[in-house]
Length: 76
Image 1: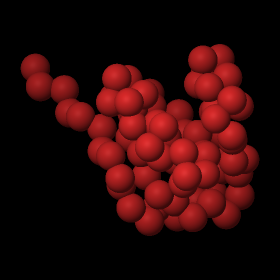
Image 2: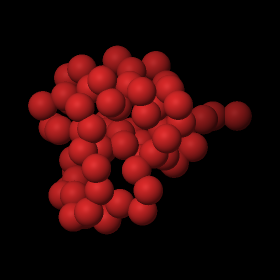
Image 3: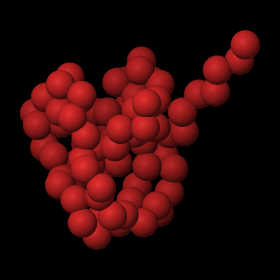
Image 4: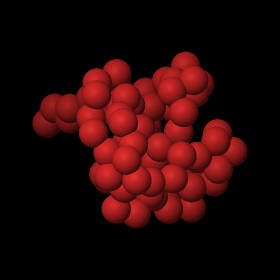
């Protein structure tokens, strides 16, 4: 799962983890491993489109397994 700073959640297969790291670091996104119970899993092309059009998976049900890359905290 990719979660943006504004709490939008996107689900993609675990095999895309290495491809998402640079994006997650650049845009301060969190990457987590989840068990998806109800929701849409996006391939990279669909994920890129969804993120750029600000769509997110609506009301997906999932269980958090592990936070792989937590979001950086803002220090003011």
